[in-house]
Every structure is written in structure tokens, then in C-alpha cells.
Figure 1 (cartoon, rainbow, N blue to C red):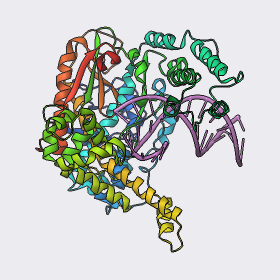
Figure 2 (cartoon, protein in one colour; figure 1 turned 90 degrees about the horizontal axis):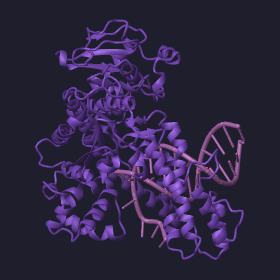
Figure 3 (spheres, protein in one colour; figure 1 turned 90 degrees about the vertical axis):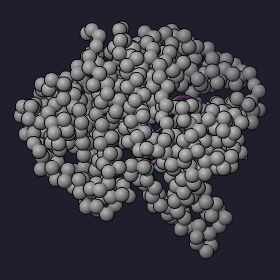
Length: 561
DNA sequence: TAGCGAATATTC
DNA sequence: CCCGGAATATTCGCTA
């Protein structure tokens, strides 16, 4: 084990294969707070540091790729919350330097700023890092699945930093075209775009409200009611059922308004200044283990603007989508052989139709969503009994998770991420309902809250285990893409990925890879193989398939079509 | 002026 | 009519 000396990062060389190895790193290039932990042969070097999002951007800016790491802060958080390690020294110990929320990662163009260097003062030192590694090792001893989760989560952190480094290729001209088609030409200043202004006038005319601001929902609601419309909100689904000439322009206005404010010209200038969209992914940012994002709304890119996501010249976007991921994960989690069989080698929902479980693909999908989310009403509830009969093991699994949640208990994913306990307020409401003079209101509030927490824990085990599958997938894809080596000519992709296929976007069960033209087909093969590997990592020999839909195209929208 | 919640839209 | 999980972001409008 080698400890890198404390020094600010500057340029760093890399090994022949781009892998930074302990012993090859001169003392003056290692960032303060980085420990290279040599846990095996030379291939097994794994960097351990307190926060990938803090350190890795600097290395990438210098063209250095890290093959493997352990993110001690992410690992610490997992181990502190996991039921598997509840009795460990780590989980029961006092709050320490690895418990805090991370600093915001540096701006992409400021990774070497004086500010960042100054911030290194209050990072954990080498002794603390080594002690933390020891404490974590002790906690995970004998828990192979949890160890896999820490490795996968850390690999995800590397991938997230790399995606921010390279950015998602974005064609500003195409985006502008999309906006102009729908909104009209870009207005000066903060005036309403032309199409929105016209629609606003129509709404005012139809409602007889010449001064109405259509952006003010209370004002719009008041004017609708003044015109005799019995509506309680201005939401789309409620307005759709109303017959009045103001409704159509109002709905159209709201749609354009959403596009303009969420992904309009202001967004474009702010988030895609240079033809690359660089979202900040927050690894483990969602309670279930899914990634969050901050800045730019990376996880809600509307389909309308995906045309603007375009590969560089000589490159392609390989878009991969794990089909029916959550139900398949549930089949593996519950070891439900019938359910796995329904999805083997085919669309899972179609498989349910073929097996006579339901009579249409739509019903299969609806019923499955009800099973995963805890739906109890409507069409979803109507097909649930049939799913219950066909896949008893899977249903029993999510039902057990729901019942545990209703009792206020913790549930865990396959690899060992645990749900939070309900808060103090939850317990208070439950206690109030048990009181002798509790009214019907208090009891009904408690019941509704109980069921809501059950729906949360029911979904937690599936969504969380699906997130673990996705982490393993992305880690495998990342490793395999690097192993493919270089191709193509010089382009505008920065080192260390200049002539290599690389991940550029991740969305729960979907990956986008930017690849040199001639590698696109081979990349698709690797992505498929990585999905199979992720399935084996989580579910071993249990025969559940994870098919991936794949397409290569110049633009994201074309590949999704 | 800053901060926050409600309402609404978007994604999976 | 409400009656499914997880999110982020914007705008309005109230409060400190």
C-alpha cells in the first residue's frame, strides 16, 4: 500500500494503457487526499479517496484516466445506512469527515482554480483515509454483495465524472431550429416568443380578460371560473375535459411556455455554451440509489429537444435501453421462474400475453406497473389478480416489502442498500391514531400514511435493485469500451477519450455512447455483453434475461425512434 | 431582497 | 373526484 504525498495536482503522465499506477505516479502529481491502495497485482490497483467528484475532474483535465477507485464518502454513507452492517464500528461510531455532504464539484473550466487548491486544506489527511479504509473493510468483511455494491457505486462515480468531462455532444443550431419551429424566432430581451404572445392574446380574448397574465395560475383559474367553467386547477388533465374556446390556446400556451422556460434559448446559452451539455450527475443522489442530477435538468430532457443531441462528424451515438428492466429485476430478486420465463428471449409484456396471463400487452404493462408501485385502483388493479396467480413469488416479494414498510421497518435491496426509517412525524401520526380519543380523521390519516410508506418500501426494493443492476452495467460498459482501444482520426473529444468510444449520457436504464463510426457495431455488442454480465453479477445462475434495445445514429432522437 | 411552498411540467 | 414509486426545475406569490 502506498500513500501519495500531499501536493496540489498538476500535469500527470499515465501508463501505457492509460491506467495510473501507484509507483508510476511522481510525488508531485498526486492530489492531496488520494491514497493508492494496492490490493492485488498491478492490475488490481484501486485508488481510494474521499470524494471522486472532487478529485477526478482534475486528473481528467490532465488527460489521466483512473481504472478503478473506492469512493470512501459514498461507501461510508452506504455502510452507515445498511441493515447488513448495522452493528459495525462504522455504523455506530460518531459522525466524522466522511459523513458530510460533498462540496459542489468544480466547474469544468475551473478544475485548477486557486479556490480548489485552497479547499484541499480541510480534506481528510492520509492517516484518516487509511483509517477509514480499515473501518470499512471491517464492516464489509463477509458481505460479498455489499462489497460489490461499494465497487459498483464507486465505478459509477468515475463514469459520472468522465461524462461531465467529455460532455454530451449538442448541436446548438439544431436546438435553435427546434425552438424557432415551435416558438417562432428568438425574441430580444425577455419578451415572450412570438408564438406564445399570439396564444396569450387568444386566451385573453376568449376569456374576456384583456390584461390576464397567462403565467399566473391563480389569475388564470379565476378567469376560467368567471367564465363559468367548473375547474379546480389549471392542470392539463383537468382542462382537457372542458369545452371552451379558451382551452385549446391555453394548453398550447402552457406547452410552449414549458419548452421555453425549461429548455429554451436561456437554457441553451447557460448549459451548452460550447456544443457540449455537461450535467452534474449526483451519484447515489436518490434515496433508492438512482442517480440524481443538478443543473440543466439532465434527467428530464424532453423528447422534443433530443434531436439536438448529435454525434460529432465521424462519430455515432449508440443508444442502449434495458428493456423492462424493473420487472426483470423483480423476477431475479424474487427468483420467480415463471416471470423470468415470460421474458426469456422476448419482450416481457408480450411474453405475458403469450402465456395467457393477460390479453394484451398494454394490460401486461399496466398491471406490472401496479405491482411495482402499489397501484390499487383502476385498470391496473383489475389485472393484478391475474399477475398474482401467474407470478406468485414476485408478488409475494413486493407484498412483503410493502408490509414491512407499513410496520415502519427497514427494507433492503439485493446488494444491501437500506431504506430510511420513516421520520418522527410519521411515528407521531401513528401514535395519535392509537390514542383513546383519536377521531376518525386521525385514524384515516394514519392509515393513508401507513399505506404510502408501504408503497415506498415496495418500490424501494425494486427500483433500488434495478439501480444496482444499472451500476454494474455502466461499470462493465465503461471497462469494455476502454479495452476496445482507439479508432478514427482526431476530433474534438478531449483526452483521454480523444479517439475512443466513451459514455456520454445515463438515464436510469438507458445509456448513450459516443463512438467513432467504425466502432459503433462493436460497441453495441459490448453493451449487450455488459448487460448479461451485470445480470450474472447480481443474480448468478438464475436464468433471467436482460435484453437491450440498441441503435446507432447521428442523433439521439433518430436512435430512439 | 431572499427564501420557501404550491402548482405544474418533464423524465424514468 | 382522489385513489402508483422516484426525481429536478420553473414560476408565482407569500412571508420574514
